[in-house]
Image (cartoon, rainbow, N blue to C red; front, top):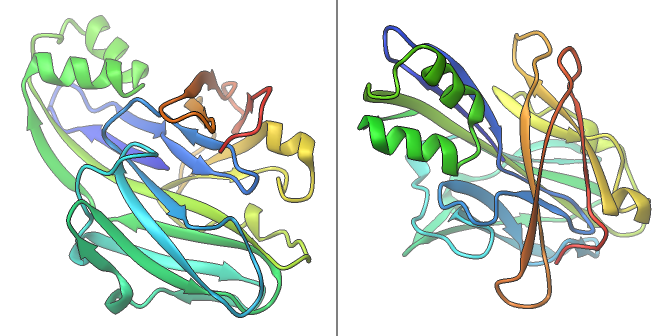
Length: 256
C-alpha cells in the first residue's frame, strides 16, 4: 500500500508518501506489520487456476488484523488487471461486515493478475503530540524532521490522506508483465520483477515508486515479511536514492 498524506497547516505543507504495503506473489508482504493505520488487500489464495472465484479481504489495520472496514463510498477505484484488460470491480460485490471488507475477483485467462484499490482523501485533526507520535510510529520520518527543523513540533496539524493498495495473484501457469503496469493512482509501487517467475525475486523485492505528475523523489519504504509462526514477522526499512524511483527490500526467507 501507498498512503499519500499531507499536512494542511499553513506553515508546513510537506507531503509524505509512505510505503505501507505491497503484497507480492510468492509472497513477500511489503508492510509495516506492527503499524495499525495501514490498508491491505489479502486474497485467500495467491496462486489460482483459471475460471474460479477468488475472495479478497480488505484489512485496515495490519496485515493480520483489521480494525475497521472500508465503506463503498470511500472508494475512488477498485479494479483488476488481467491479460484481457482492466475490469472495474462491481461495488455491489464490495461487502462491509464488522471490521473487514471483502470482494471477489473471477479468474479467466492465465497470467499474473493485479488487484488494486484506492480510497478518496480524508482529513483528520491531530494534536501536536499525537501527530508527532503518528509520524514516528507510522514511518514518515521526512515530515517529522521537517517539523523539527521548522520548530513546529508543538503545533497541531490537519492531515489529508488516502490509501492505494495492490495485490498480485498468479492465475494458471502463464506469466505476464502486468505486475509492472501503473494503475494510475496518485502514488503506487510497481515491482521490477515478477516474483512468480523467479525465486530470487521473491526473496529480494525491488520496487519502483511512482507518483502522479511528480518528478522522481526519495521515498522512504518499510517492508515486512510474515512467517508461519503466528505473530512472527520481520521488518526492514529503505529509501529510494534521490533522483531514482527504485528501492530494493531484501529478505532471507519467504514470506507467508
